[in-house]
Amino acid sequence: MPKVVLAYSGGLDTSIIIAWLKENYGYDVIALTADLGQGEELAPLEEKAIKSGASKIYIEDLRKEFVEDYIFPTLKAGAIYEGKYLLGTSFARPLIAKKLVEIAEKEGAVAVAHGATGKGNDQVRFELGVKALAPHLKVIAPWREWDIRSREDAIDYAEARGIPVPVTKKSIYSRDRNIWHISHEGGELESPANPASYDMLVLTTPPEKAPDQPTYVEIGFEKGIPVSLNGEKMDGVSLLEKLNAIGGANGIGIVDMVENRLVGMKSRGVYETPGGTILVYAHHELELLTLDRATMHYKEQVALRYAELVYDGVWFAPLREALDAFVDSTQRTVTGNVRLKLYKGNIMPAGVTSPYSLYDEELSTFGRDEVYNQADAAGFINLFGLPLKVRALMEKKAGLR
Image 1 (cartoon, rainbow, N blue to C red):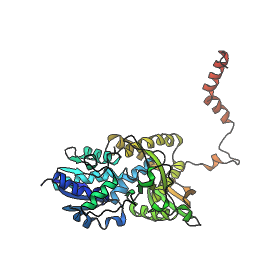
Image 2: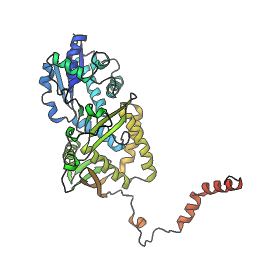
Image 3: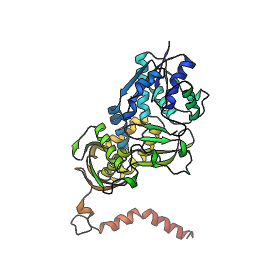
């Protein structure tokens, strides 16, 4: 019997896909669950996958690889999609695709499958990963083939076959969770006119219910990578888990946005990224101190393109690798400590230090100094403004003003 490896989350879609693949393809279904920090969600999956019809399930702990090889490069790049989305689902998909390929090759499978819909971005991310790593594998996307057209239809399909699913028609959010974030889509969120209900939050305390006293954190960076929290050295996974708890308790990192999907439509979602939001803020504060103006501004342009590549699922591409080389070059001096004040959903700087600081108090002071000759500014302004002066003289001579 030919084998297929299914990216299995235990959610509604992948739960019914096991039965659907067996019924429609006659495949032996092997489930793969990537442990990216979903926490308690993983506990029932082994039993559930077998009961749903899978012959075997792999639950792979990929947290370290996820943080070090996917999250941190994106953090160093400063990549944020459309000014708000910290790419929590986006950079998880290439890693899952990579593991799908590895298990498929190990098991001698002829195909891989995923539960992404034909309307979303994840189908692209999964399949571009497979094309880049194992183009010979067949990819099956049931949402593009079956007659199921809604989550309500999927629930009916599951109930008819006795497949337990974690949603109901009353609680119908589509969620994705990992160590970086949790996303919420569907339900009343499908109308941008509806305010998001904080009842949906999983990782984060609503800001108005956060403590009335601020919390201070200090994050240490080495070459753009966070390596310590409040003076304690930590590996990336432990540091992010700790920051999630601290940020979540203080209402940090709730984003409600309408975004432009790669496939051409707009979608609305709510993202919780408590620890990640703190790291992004801290990293930017340190770059403000340690990067020169030209590098900083050019890197901001690179960040926009990097975010698009990650969002679009083009992780395994020469351009992304080339941009990483540029980013790594900029991060050689992004070392130091950043102290932040967290208060009811807000992050405020509370001090930053670096052995590579470009801030010179003697130059920047408003008091007396012996370094900067203010008279030099006149010649600078004359030269810098010369093109404007020449144009103004021309316009006056030509009668244009």
